[in-house]
Image 1 (tube, helix red, strand yellow):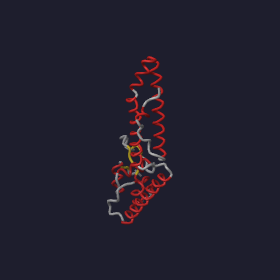
Image 2 (cartoon, rainbow, N blue to C red; image 1 turned 60 degrees about the vertical axis):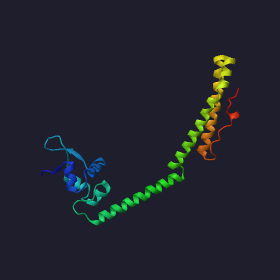
Image 3 (cartoon, rainbow, N blue to C red; image 1 turned 90 degrees about the horizontal axis):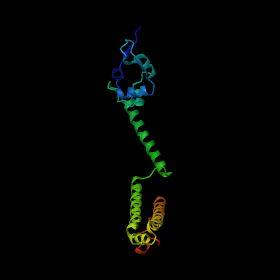
Image 4 (tube, one colour; image 1 turned 120 degrees about the horizontal axis):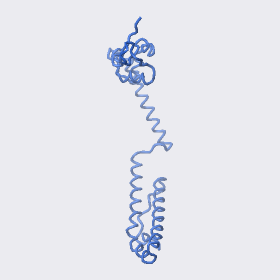
Amino acid sequence: MDRLEMTQAEYARHRGVSRTAVNKYIAAEKIKLEPSQDGSGRMIIDVAAADLALANSQERITLLGGGEPSRRGGSGIGKLTQARTTTETYRARVAELDYEERVGKLLVASDVTAAMRLCAESIARDVELINSAAPELVAAFRQGGEDGLRVALRKMTRRILATIAENLRAVATAEAAPEAPPSEDKRRPEK
């Protein structure tokens, strides 16, 4: 007795579902693709084996395979089951997101955006210190030449990096806002 073979598209029409649903079952290895017996090299589905694997249940392939509702006038029960499944899946995902937010694995996008803005402002303020250090850098160069300038730049870099780190820690822990812009006398680098 010859077996009945169909392409993926034909089998999807046979089951009354989308080809995507059939592809999902193939990916999950519930339905097997096999070379056609006619020697054409086409990959086909053995209809009897596939129907048996899916237990001849239209609702099962529709719900589990993510296919479209039956085009053959399927029962309202399948649609109701699908709607309930969708609702419960949504509720489970919302609960999971809520839990992850409470344990600190998930952050609110507006909080992250605000923290990033504060960090950027803090870094910009700290980088502005370089502009106000020009007279001191010139003096360091005059006194010690290139080596004196390097020493002055290292000190200034360390101070700026320490300030940035302190401000970022304050933003990350939300204990306090980043420090206010330094006054003019605080902006002067160490000699």
